[in-house]
Amino acid sequence: MKHKESFLKYLTFEKRYSPHTVRSYENDLNQFYNFCINTQSGHSIIKVNFKDIRAWVVFLMENRISARTINRKISTLKTFFKFLMREGLIDSNPVDKVLTLKQGKKLPQFIEQAQMDKLLDFYQFGDDFEGVRNRLIIEMLYVTGIRRAELINLKDIDIDISRLTIKVLGKRNKERIIPITKEFRKSIEAYRIVRNDIKTDTMNSCFFLTKSGKKLYEKLVYRIVNKHLELITTLEKKSPHILRHTFATHLLNRGADLNAIKELLGHSSLSATEIYTHNTFKKLKQIYKQAHPRA
Image (cartoon, rainbow, N blue to C red; front, side, top):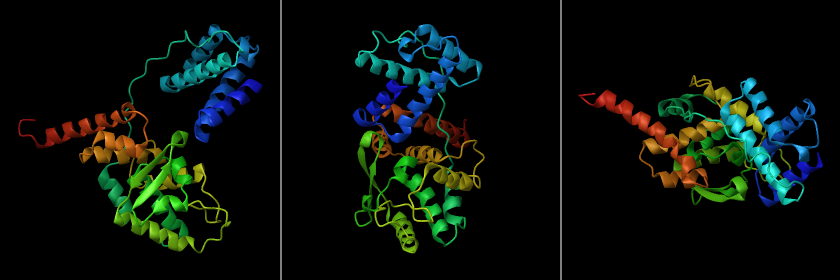
């Protein structure tokens, strides 16, 4: 599907989307394309019409795909066909009349502070390279709120321990500076010491490495985080992103300004950050019920 390849290049080089985001678009398009092939509407992608897309949405609903995921897939198609219009390949966007599904607002899950303290202060990670590295991965995700991809792509020069800052390259190559504490600096220095024993390619400037000296990869980071969160929480999801939610929620619970949290997270708009206020309000209600004499 040559139009798909052109579209993905457009997302990568013009829109400057991250590789992870581009892969999501590609997966959505592949699923839709396969659906079209396997149904009576198996014609060229540029001849797709409103009925084809509506049939796909129904198919997804029948397979119990969540409204949130379906809406994302609809958005992918809308962007794709908008690109085809821009290229002069179609006259109208067949997705324009497709309505998105109503979805309940799902609050981000997070881990309680006492549980995080238990993991970082008392769990024995080990003094070898992997133990020190794994602890730092979890601590960095929690104390900085960075995304998994941002952690993997951190370079040595991005971490300035003299100024106590970390430079992060986020979505769409947007750069931000995150402050760190002197206590966290100790963890970074401890990792750098054990990392000196790892043989690595001199061209590899990545901060986090595998034990064979290569760049970290997404599945490994997920496995490390999942394994250790299993020790402290019963949450269904135990992913690196849970630690990002935990970072934001804990800051809000301790009175941090919402705009400051937005900048630390690298959100482009405040609306993306505001969802965390629902968690803090829930916490306030709980405190009120426990503490107020008339509650």
